[in-house]
Image (cartoon, one colour):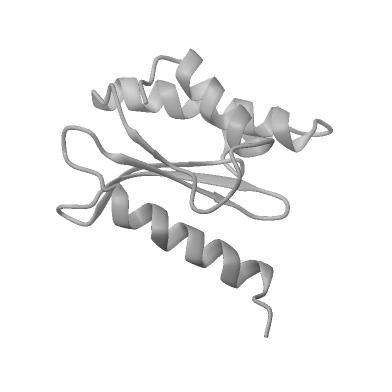
Length: 120
């Protein structure tokens, strides 16, 4: 029996998570992509805490995102993420694409975060 799209992504996600994990020095940048929004968390896996979370539903992004494409929304989220990471003193992260292809919204978010000064 064939796997559903969700089951395929979950398998890929688990395969990725076996290899990468976040530390207090270099946390993990986890991406979740819904149909309309995009969410990003900076996670320390050793203490199992979320250090920082940014999404396209925040006021800074939602005010600007009316009538623009979702990839442009993801760029705004990436820039905001880089700013907040700089404020918290986080310079480099490990990118966790959560089973999504490095394409479209995920790619534009990552590139915007890199432009903002994050290293991964």
